[in-house]
Length: 230
Length: 126
Image (cartoon, rainbow over the protein chains, first blue to last red):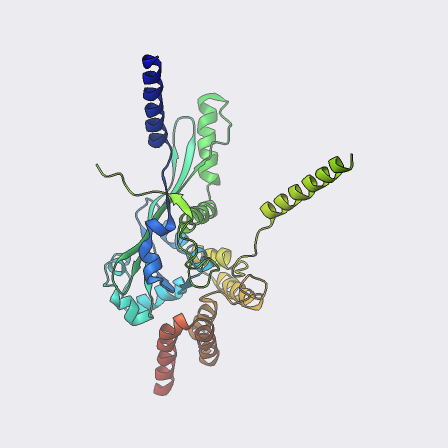
């Protein structure tokens, strides 16, 4: 009898370990991003993205996707193209310089409560023996212009299998597929998937003042992306 | 029999409610129309045609703002339009648009005042 109970206990503990280890862990907007609720910024200045991908065009294309989702989440978003233009007129052409600018400058010049930095981590198609994947990965971060504190940060990744299930036809077929994939992957497709990546990012953002859920969505769950401390 | 029928009816109604609850998408907060697509086209290949397409999509978004959850013109739309006018030398229309942006979104006031002042300074020089 004792043995049986002992085995049951071991199995239970084991299951708990497996369960906690495997699935993603969830946190809420309220516990993960408390400063977003404390400071409650009304306006976000969206800076041009920092392109860390291998595609030189990614920056211009991704830039056209960021304004809408953040505005739809209830924030006043400054028009990205106009802001980028004005910065150039002020002599700042380099995104690197913009990303290292003291934050109070953005408050002084634009009156923005917060700044959004986006980094394009991946924007490419990788070809493997039997498949090809399109990957877009974006890291987004909102920082306060008043306290220079990070208020919110999230990463969204989209991986699309482009092989389309057609794996017959031997090596020649595979090469043909790879060529077709390369030709068919137009920049518009990347932009479509970038919109999806943005949706995955923005749903984790506490709603802004123009949204019905402003200061009411602390309980919304999201996947915890905080790196595990060792 | 009657009770069974009533129960069945209730079930059908409940399922109906649940299904409509799932499928009914609320309108988006703002009506952007084709703004995102035309912005992308203008970035991909800047030409008089793509610039005009972008301007038209901004105007469409402004004119059809009522067809959205907020019934308000989206943030930055009047500023975008004003900036297009400014680049085209239509300073009166630019000022009008920047003032409208400011009126709808007080968050933009600081930036819009800066743009308005720029126009006034350059007008004064003429």
